[in-house]
Image 1 (cartoon, rainbow, N blue to C red):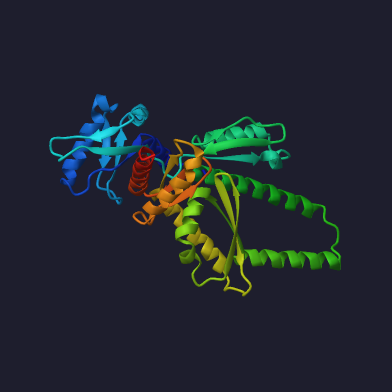
Image 2: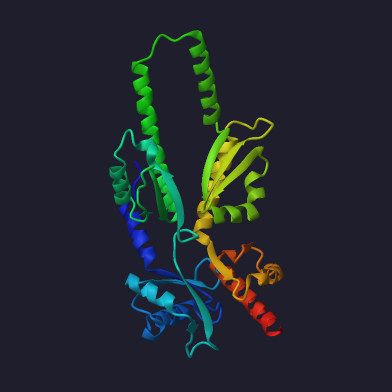
Amino acid sequence: MPFLSAQDMGQAAKSARTVVISGVPDGVLNNDVMSDILVIHFQKAKNNGGDVEEVKYPTTEKGVAYITFEDQEVVGSVLQKNEHRLEDRRLPRYYPLKVTAYCENVFSSVTAVLDMSVFKYKFVLEDLIQELKKKSTALSFGSLQSNGHISVQGSFPAMKWLRDFLLLKAKSLSEDKNEESKSHQRPKKRLQRHRLTREMNNFVHDAEGEKQVVVLDTDVYHYMKCFFSKELLANTDVVISDVTDGDITTLHLQRGRSRPDAGQVLRVKEKIENQSIKLHKSLRKERINFERCIRDKKKYRSVCESVKSRFPNVLFIPCDTHIDLIGSSSAVFEFKREVNKKMQGLFQNR
């Protein structure tokens, strides 16, 4: 039965005390000196800082550092400061920094509504919900409704854990029902044997990997579809259909017209899941709100198109009231700053 280990809990606690710093000047000073300057900046009271436990710089992303504080409350204070300007006599000028909360996944949380009524004949639903709350403190549960529905909010990895946990529970229910039916079976007729054989054949097909399901964060799916679809489906005959429900997208994978080798669909599923894990660790999301009026959204989109050439690995998604940016921390920060700069110029020339 899955559970959150002490190591997972410790990592989650550390993540809650960590912030991501974008815009750190690259190549200006020695890395050790730059780390020292970052620590000084985020320990100063005027910057809403506090005692720093750890600084990670350089990282795999250019211009990005991670600061972990000793006290989680400092994170909230640092994030509330409107502007962080990195200043030091060893720097040639000041540098604006972008400070965001660190999270294991690309987005802070997703929300889903669960139908727990399937368990009501085997479990007391209130007790089952309490069990879930104890096993994963990273999830936030709403009130259990009379129809068995309950809303849940949390990080995508935590939601994925919840899904796997409930699937195990559902599987145990199915196995119990099978055992009960066996004890009350009558002698099988030929038609029943034929039906059983057909069901077993269908089961074998699924076991060979001809039909698979993958659950992804919707924004991660959009990014993956834009940049990795050809790579993931290269030299395969696998058809993918998607169903999006808010923050979560479910992919249904099955073989195409020609019969692929046994297990091909399963291998594609594993490639998608592995790529999803990598993206969750590296991507961040920013939002550009249409500050003036919604009528300006065409101009925002046009400016994003013009800036895109400089940031080929950033995905921008136009919406009715805003534009979402998805990419690495440094890339989305620079992309957003460039767009805002160009839009300010357009507004001033009106």
